[in-house]
Image (cartoon, rainbow, N blue to C red; front, side, top):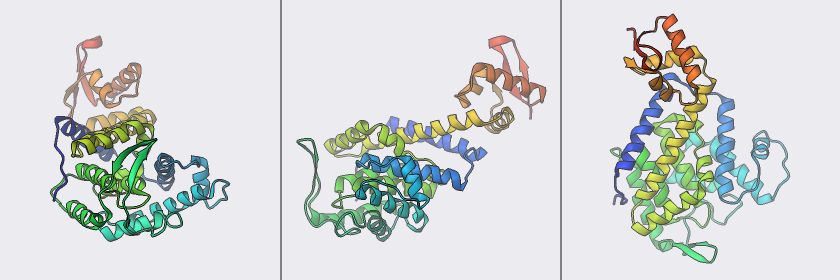
Length: 318
């Protein structure tokens, strides 16, 4: 049975915005794929995802562990990081549609941390915040059936990967199939679903934004529980993904040269545009930088212009 959720105007707006930003990233290969960038992304991902669960190790300590250096810290925290490093090194061996892969990933992620790692729980669990019970998970005897249904949903090729990744993440938190490790598995598997459709997400540690908005993260989970639909959580996660892509594009526009920006802008299909339109693409540059770019574009005969000052319009030469 398909998990319940609604497609709201807000969800449609985020999907449109995310698709546009992914297109901009892919069109210009702004995010140069390299082992060093991948390493930095994984450090941030592991640090943020585990910090949400209370891990105390720093990004520097996680980097040291990736480099096989000795780190002094709580044994449990070090083991959590070492396990996560193993999982992310094997990321491309997991199939997001496979329940067997899912259980294998949990076994690696939680080895030495819980009994029966890689196996569904055999007792009831609840989530307690302070003195309040926030969520009572379904009975343990229902877990295998619920997870089979969830993976059947993942195998539905007609569903958007963006929606599917959010729905799976929420439903996993609701079912709570493991004694421990549910949160980190939800975030890991959402990443895996997105990478299959959009490879850029391997280099995009959106877990950092989840960590920075934890109150909103847990509020959206609770609201979805209350309404019986994952809609609030989908809206929250799509906003996180959209913001993460926006930050990536802003960062890259800062480090691009004027030639890079001009060449990229021409590929976007504008015919008639203003300086404001140009700045809406490169949101982190100043108006003075935009004016210099456009002046150079005129000198290189990429554009022609009409009007003066703030009324200037530009037309791309074909």
